[in-house]
Amino acid sequence: MTTANEIAERYRAFAGQEASPSSPHYAALANAVADDPELCGRIAALPARCHQPALFLAAVRFATGSIPVDGPDLLGRASTAWEAVSGTMRARSTQTNEPGRCAALLPALQDLPQPLALIEVGASAGLCLLLDRYRYEYRGVRTASLGAGDCRLDCELRPGAPIPRWIPDIAWRAGLDRNPLDVTDERDMRWLRCLVWPDMPARAERLERARSLAEADPPHVRSGDLVGDLPALLAEAPAAATPVVVHSAVLAYVDAERARAFVATVRDAGAVRIGLEAPMASPASDGPGGTASAGFRWGSALVLDRDGERLASCAHHGGWLGPPHE
Image (cartoon, rainbow, N blue to C red; front, side, top):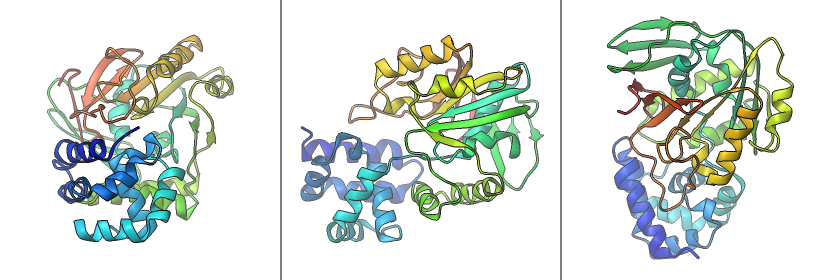
């Protein structure tokens, strides 16, 4: 059983290694949790999947209506609204649906036979299924403007990064998630907003623009498992289209055996698999798979791979794209 001390260590590691570079506010809140033995004990008593700092912080926001202003405010809210906070943690998960990752996925789709039948596992609300409907602005060692629309995705191209050249032709698309979110459901969208960290206004604006685009033609995301239910979904794809299965920040939450089964399922179906995963969980590494537990670290970048071949490294939310081993 996880102890309060282990929770405290995990929250301190989250504050120092994951939150502080991009969200000092969340780093301060996580350190406040780590310094409160009673709260750490309450979190430790929850199921292991509820121990994630990002899940707890989002749940406090969701249950109490806003971002805590500081550590004492957070601790007070967690104490008075614990039933609502813990209930949210049990019912929901960190289904961050970051459309910015599409800017990193795009290069992996360039040289595939068109059109594509696109399937995303761990699709959340399906915003990454709409990658052909966004506007892309690449800058850095090369510049490129691709696509159109009100949702603009900015990405820095670093030396050695693959260069996207066009928007793929997507003839059919569908998503799979154990708990799909609905872009037309306000509670689901409020949860997605709570998953966007403070100090990241551009991400929050991007989410709203993507949501507005998706509401006009909501992506189809069905409830299902990435191993057991994927073959049936693949069978629905048009025969004339190249089947492509994409996943981003999913395999960290799947044990190694199931991650390998997922990779084999895609391969056996004759589909192309494209992943954006942490180095410890990427099929292009020694993995795949890795439980997002106390010992798991996301690292500084995600690995873009296609069928096991490293194509690039990228920022967690698609802000930059670099060479395979940056």
